[in-house]
Image (cartoon, rainbow over all chains, first blue to last red; front, side, top):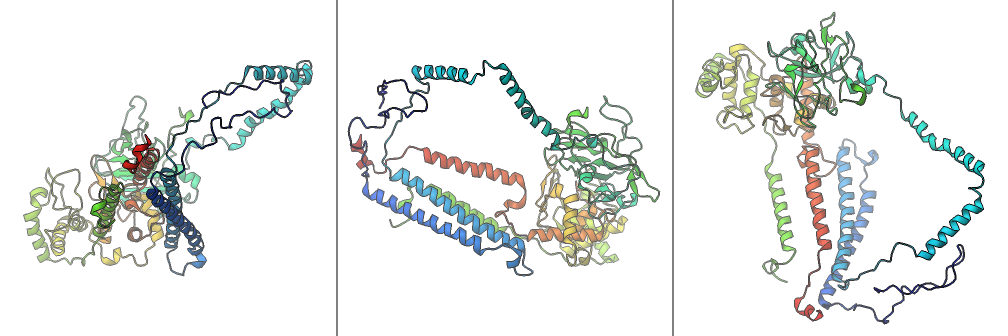
Length: 356
Length: 275
């Protein structure tokens, strides 16, 4: 098999006509006898393997029938669940039945096939030679000739007007996808830089929706998640407006009064009664960051362990976050409730391309 | 063909032993990891109890917290800490502390009876007020809004304790404990007093009714079925990813190695004539 058979030389074949007589590639050259013996080396071992494979295939058959039975029998629809029963349990039962039957069926099928191959088929090594990928020189020459003929017949080289207008005709179609990309969605405009927080907008607890007075959060070490009042059903607004309020003891909160290399602006007068408000969105990739430790004043992000020092302007003290958590300026409204004094003065959440 | 001893050198014997060991370990774990206990009745305050609490405090607590509970360099002042803080710290076994570490973990309370804990709590409360121990009605799940509790839990608790209260790691050796063993009273007291690194969720930010809702959610979650199959402790995606990558992928690698391994000659004597 290692020698390539002689190439049959005949008249040059014309494209579109049937190919000449098939090449004698697969014809056995030496003898009609198979190259291996189909008889097993050990009859008893082969018999055992055969029984095992058959048993596994029967098991796969039964499990496959079980899958169909589980699909039909273990309903999860509300109609078949008795009133008062937990629908989750029905889902659990259905998942378990479907999962176990299907995995047993596939596993038995696969295991049986592998045992078949490894224990029943004769242990012979077969090498299959690859032919050269490059075409024969005659065929390459013929192709070149036909290509040139075709080009001449089509007149594409002789009629530049037709050729160029054809290119012109296809150009808009090629450019169309670029234009269509525009409609994938509106540009964010300045949405990333602003939240719905504005001067006088009260902070209400997430879930309870109650506004807070400083007396409600009087114990140092208190923390609560708040959202802007009236936006509890506006997911677009809530995605950026989540805030945590943290109450500090006297002298625990360090209010920066100067610039620190341009990264830290003054937060003077942004707190109310030692209550400080930070964005709940990590400046790294935007995980909710509220693992506040009242003993160390660390705010930890659960995703990548960015750690912010809540007592010092939520500056980053560990982890991949690049910027401090934006702080929301607070004030008391006329009724004495905690409210925003303005929007955030910098974009909340992860950095983005044009953030600067 | 007869006894298991004669098959101990069988190729599958090693796998069978490992699988059997895993099953035994799983059954043992499931047997011994039980649920939490129940809480006793709320304390009644009178001067004799306070006196008894004072003497217990002097014997067992004052070496760290000071003779008048004013605090030392080792431990904080307890004046104003309140009865709820004492009951939480002592009923969960965190106090008396075993050693000074990053934090005190939950352990069985073996030194003090619940009545003695109430006595000490009464003494501490007499020093400077502070949050009181909630009554059984305040922590009862009857009529609580579990759905609102779920919302409040995911807004304020789940970041540290996990979505199902399984706990999680914090910074510098600290951790948020699992809530599975906590009694409703202990959960209420923890929210009220903010033990160790936990923030305080006072009645102004999380009202008593909302605390009850949160407790109802936590206790209801414990009995919830796991529609996906094994819960893996409900600690979340890290556990599941670890099992998927190490367990699942490792298993697939072993299968691939088995598939491509060179076939053994099963019967040495008969196969020798081939070569």
